[in-house]
Image 1 (tube, rainbow, N blue to C red):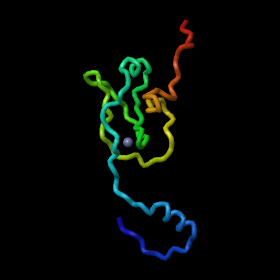
Image 2 (cartoon, helix red, strand yellow):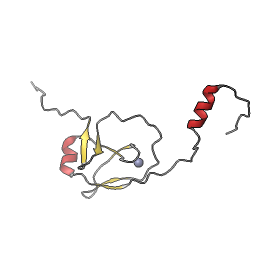
Image 3 (tube, rainbow, N blue to C red):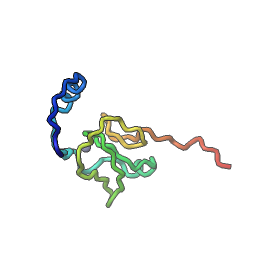
Length: 108
Ligand SMILES: [Zn+2]
């Protein structure tokens, strides 16, 4: 991509430029591998999305041979928090968050 070499005097631009000082290529996230969630809990929750504890990227996972695996992935760049139902690794283990439990449904 061509870089425009223009004299920029705007102070707003300087603030932005400082923010982007890193300019790194897409980095691989260090988190990947087995997600230690009880498969029954995982399937009962009805939440297939799992959030990477390192970069907050979400992946829809399916158990294979009784094991959930989070694939290797590029680090998520977007800093906005996830809002969809997903599994998140907490202090004590993985837990589904944001999921509505359909216990109060009244079916005809
Ligand atoms: Zn990650």
